[in-house]
Image (cartoon, rainbow, N blue to C red; front, side, top):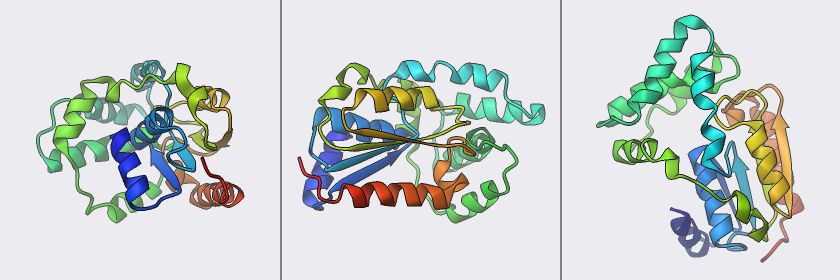
Length: 211
């Protein structure tokens, strides 16, 4: 997948790549494997090592409100067994309260409405849910990255922690870290204006960057 990102960068003449959540794993892997391939990389709610996912089980066990805990916990378990697009959509719906700072955030319903036409690959989700979501392990290679990197994180993210984002920012030579204080995992939804402003500012400041 990281190699595919490189192909898209070259074929579409892109100068920057942004990946969120699992997409952040992919663009970070791409930045490590192909330094300078993109002029800028934006890692949104990502991690540099699978060890940063070890806390998820604890967060699930302690998740509140209690009436949503079983729904959310079972959604993670079902990732390893999904067979249809409908099953993927259902488990993502059940999981969404865990991904917002406020489990009852009214924007959840709006987000699901706007993404209702999404196409899912149950085979891909099932595979990576069983393989530590790609088993990303690049923490000791972050200093290989030559392009500017923007690292984005939500203060209340129960999946990809601020600690993981800090590790990325500290390891990449030209990195900037932005933490959204009112967000969970869905920073681009929960603080949309601030998110767009932060990304735009980074891109404009590094528009002349090249590898």
